[in-house]
Length: 249
Image (cartoon, helix red, strand yellow):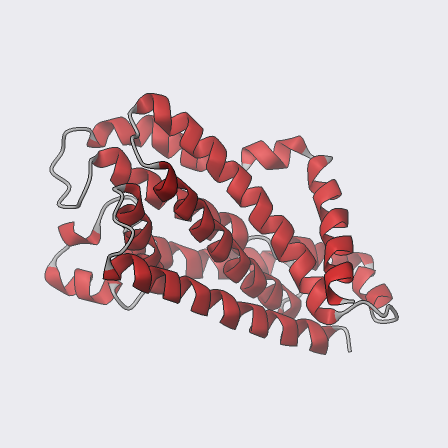
């Protein structure tokens, strides 16, 4: 029942996305601009991290894609609330968990596809990374997308208008980006800022993907990043499911 409902809803939302190619490619525009206009500035600079500048920047841009893209996924829920879609869901026998999973799996598939485009664009610019590391990076994008999309939908169910939702997400996402070291490794930061950034879970994901991009698959940094990503995703899906259950009770 759960698998059937999830597949059904995933297909519905995937078809909606495919009918809007602009949404598919526009979402990858900002990371691509960073890649094209910011990336060349880092070439040859001592960045204090492992690997070259592209092995440092591209993993950060991949997770930036998941961070900002998935965080704003809740906008669609607000529109559905305003259109009365949620009122109709109350009388359906569809699993409440499937209502969430169908959406977040669509989001994860979308952001992984955009991540593939980003990596393909980075290769002719000088990115060199093992295939295994690139695939691990896509896995982290998927987990981060599932986690943040779940929390985004949960928050959207608590708010009434897009005017409330947008500023709330920006207030949360910007500090997360700055403290995670997405653009530059936090080892360049002053000691106090480096310590503070270690309290931000996303930093451990960024560090893990950077390890994978230089072919280090068995380091504690990568293992810890995997555990953090799985933990965040599990917690976020739990919170999102409970919020859906209350909203459609």
